[in-house]
Image (cartoon, rainbow, N blue to C red; front, side, top):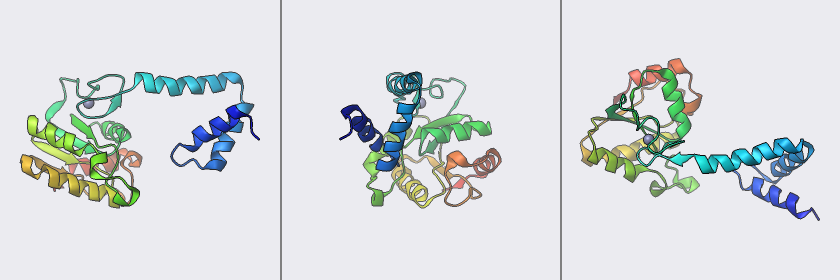
Length: 197
Ligand SMILES: [Zn+2]
């Protein structure tokens, strides 16, 4: 009954995480009521992000270049790798201003209940990186959630054979919290107080 372009957009929105049919409809009709410019600008931003943003082949961060700005920076400490779940976590850690090492983005957390298995995360790539490089310390900065803890545990196990020192952010991050929402002070303290893991 709906015109095909409307039905199609509702269907596309509905594929996004956290967007149910109702929200997909609301978003679609919202766009239809906006000036055409607004919709074009959104469409362009979506196309742009896919065309211009690439995975860093070393740390799997998302950015405008490969290697990313951190991996390409000769001023960063290459003996440390901080392991995070998502690219946004890097921004949170950078805001603290105290970490000067490299990063590794897992792209999710180990959660068999939700169908996210070990192979869905960039763990093998991390192990290869640590084996092949000059890495002394791997800092596990996964979220302070059940999944984040399970992920840290799994990564630690996989890194055992490399002989690298493995540390974990100190307690103090609110339990159940996502790193990207932690305030700078709490995160700085957690980073400075990291412990052997
Ligand atoms: Zn990188």
